[in-house]
Length: 221
Image 1 (cartoon, rainbow, N blue to C red):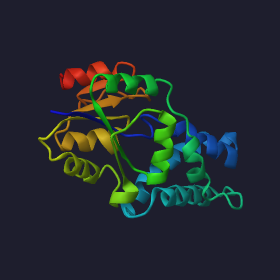
Image 2: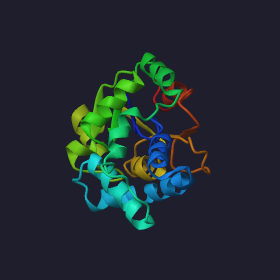
Image 3: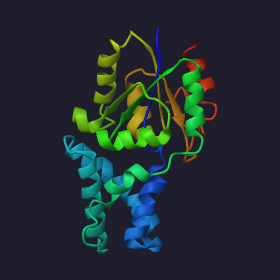
């Protein structure tokens, strides 16, 4: 039976906090960047839940315009799409390439389930530099996590819930670990923000350095 490890991308493999914060600093100044980043993380899921058919590029633009509007800060002319333009350049966490390479060497297939668009995830996968066997993005299925559609489409594409051994790997409890738990899918929480312990993930790690071992524990070869 095939073993599949599916991943969230932004926050788990790619440092979206660094990417978003860096752009906010460029646009609004270092003195506002941290506060705006916190507020951005509140706005984005609300926009996605309200308009699940909206592309992620549009979500980024709406969120940026909303940030500027509600804080009274001036968004420079022509910069409403700045976050979307910057996304392909958001940095990959240093542990990811080697961590995922070890996972592939253990015989796991790799997939990405992401709240983004096809062109954006393709750029990020190129930056990660590890082959993914499958990728499912919100822009193509009209749904954003934590809704269950990403996992439903994954199951359809691999032949059903019982056709493979499947573990989901992610940083976000809200977007990924919680819905995986609801669906009965084992999960590994990459707790990059060193948040308090949570009972829902099957394993908790701080990076992908020991990910291959944790996956093998959950689904032995």
